Image 1 (tube, helix red, strand yellow):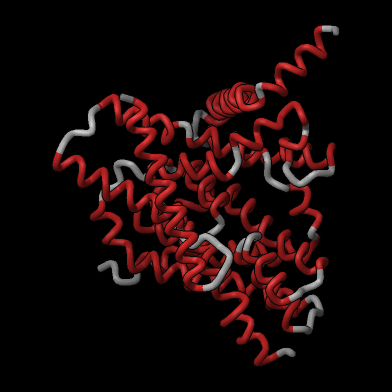
Image 2 (spheres, one colour):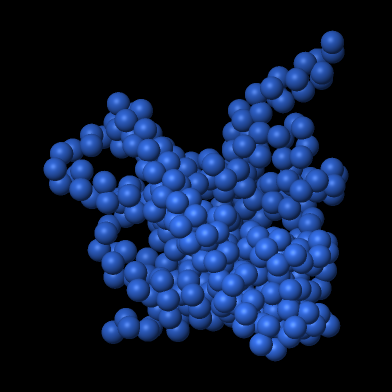
Length: 118
Length: 256
């Protein structure tokens, strides 16, 4: 059933967010630390594990694949609701700080990729 | 009631559905432009994301609000479709099918990139603030934190009691970073070797902005999305942890 896939996905997300919130409280900050990342790890773990022990079934998988496939359109909607106006209103300091940070971060990708990748 | 009123009330009442149609049209137009003018070389999704940003600017220009196009009642459903809940749900879904071995291989580099990413962005923001004449530790730290992400800026600013002007500036710096990552990633990807799970995890850790990484990778290679998104999701938390504490203390060594 398609709903099994969607439910499994939703379950992973909720567990991840709860753990992320708890992690934040534990350290003493009002922020979710890696909740979505934890949810992803949980889904990866479950899907790797479930595949070995019993088959999730193609129709159940469809409930997950749909959301994965609709990802780009959701990102387009996300882009359309950004505060672009506010970003440009920040003036030169904001532009410079953000721009240099992105530029230097890009430069570091090849360096870090090489690190320990022999 | 004339037909236009009826149309408006239907579209607003069914906001999410309206958003589906709207995004579908934007994506279609984008892929059409991509095929027609670039033979598909210029990724359709990259065009769609840029179109989204341009429309967001127009939305902000028309309404003066903070949610881009979603502040126009007609398009309020975009706020829901593009909001954090649905976006994160889809991001988690992309993790399905990721192999554990890939994660293990890049795990250490991913974690290292998180720390380097937060410190580097903070440093750039702080130095820029100093260059523009800020000389109190609270303002320098808050602007540095905003350059980490636009969430870390206000969190740090309120922890340190920064002025609202500085907090607004820190949010703007984070937004600029996020938008630049969305727009430039597909162009820069091939020059920095962003074409495998390992470099995608490093990219997510260095940039950290969830929306920037999500959109940047989507426009580059959707297969890389889960790897980058995975590390990026820890970035804001790490930033909220480090900026008001360790990094603030580091700034106070030089400024009061």
